[in-house]
Length: 148
Image 1 (cartoon, helix red, strand yellow):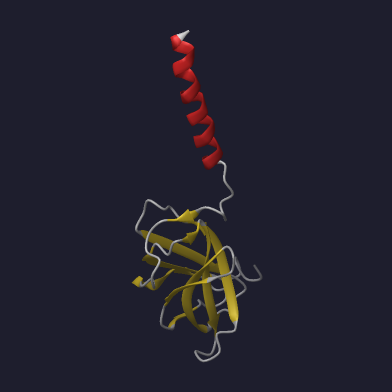
Image 2 (tube, rainbow, N blue to C red; image 1 turned 90 degrees about the vertical axis):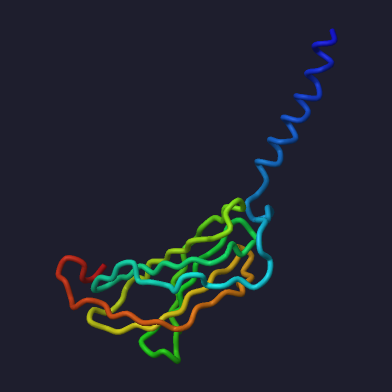
């Protein structure tokens, strides 16, 4: 009988823990810096082809919603970055830094693009960290990837 009385709190605690683990990701907030984030490493072009490119960067963990979007604003004029590419990513609250990565598609071959990076929470609130404008040039046309 005393064995049964001791297992009831254990079962109740297990149910409580499971209910916390099943919470909606956008409702769970990451711990960490809530102040302005900084771009710790300059964004870098991870790879570039004739019609697409990947950009990668690191920031302090921005906190906020677990689900975030990496955002790259880009264009062929550094004063008019009117194209946007986004990629969803999840924050690990246990890590102090966050790595973001975005693929930009439908680029023109042999063209110089200017870009800056930032991130935003799933609820649309922008994180305070934003990079300076950088640039890269796509490769000349390649029959293998042209039109992708």
